[in-house]
Image: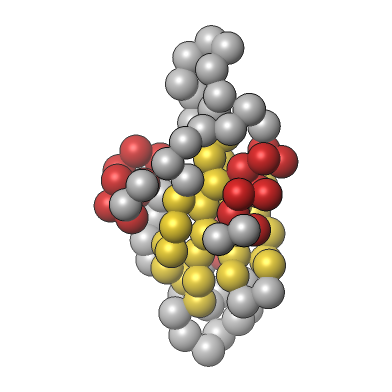
Length: 91
């Protein structure tokens, strides 16, 4: 999925801050120099609804107020948040 498609489909902010992501989604993790997340997007009853996203720091500020940019988003939805996080960790 392209960055623009992910921003539009999942309403992902770009650029953002880790603090902003944490106030919108509950599954946000700092993983090395990246910020990864699992987001929920309702697709209908009994359909996979979790997606993964990876952000990278755009400046030297690695705090919760540093600027991050969207690097990748899964093009598929997953059954649960764990699979979405696993996908994000592999990117």
